[in-house]
Length: 187
View 1 (cartoon, rainbow, N blue to C red):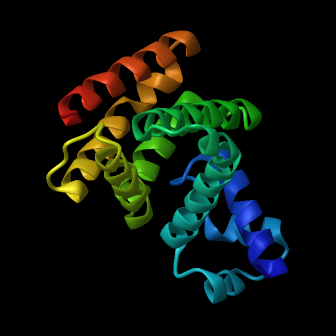
View 2 (tube, helix red, strand yellow):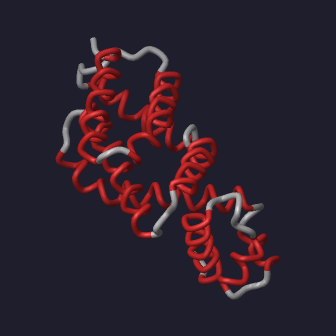
């Protein structure tokens, strides 16, 4: 990644997490990154593209954190649960690190999940877990992509709740909801 692109992404992340997607302007990002506004468009089509790229980088950071642990987890259903728990924990840490207000958190979840929730890479990852679960004899899945989209949408519906309730209560609820989903996928 080029130095300017990284500066743009770092600046954008700071503004998105502190002030929200809607209140962040490309002018502010450019000024903070020490570049001209037009330079942003050499790397990103628009603010949405910049937001999506930031979200993808954040998702990869979370996956990198859990990748080592994933190697020790053998069952596909446990991997799926672990990814959700890790994602929620990482978002909680981000909220704290950026002193994110509840309104910014709500906006980031709504905008982020709309733009990223059914992103092809998210669907592919969930499909891979479902296929692994079928191979392990854990799941019986018909239309993998349809089930993956439904699972991602269920997480989308509950994510804000899990981020705004007590951490232990959220973890218990995440486990319970995953178990309910897995019951519907089991053979």
